[in-house]
Amino acid sequence: MSDDKNWTGKAAMAGAAIGSAALTAALLYASRRKERAEKKKAKPTAEMPETD
Figure 1 (cartoon, one colour):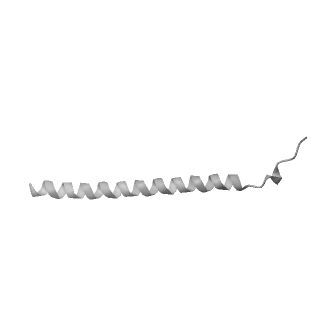
Figure 2: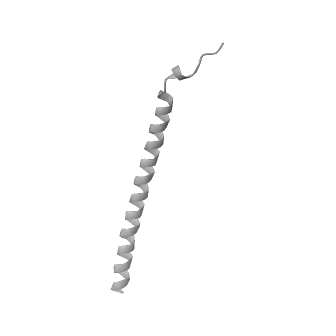
Figure 3: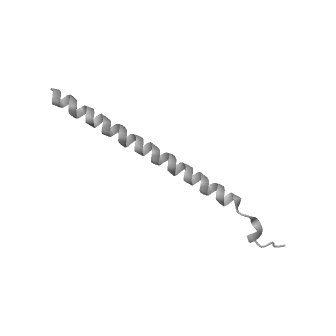
């Protein structure tokens, strides 16, 4: 019975580590998307020719 508790404890720790890594990756991905979106908006409009 003690082997079962030892195994479940290790599985819980592994699950927590995987969940933490997934959360970190999601936050990094979201922040990079936000930075790229802000960069696109910040481009000067001088590149676009004026037309009448």
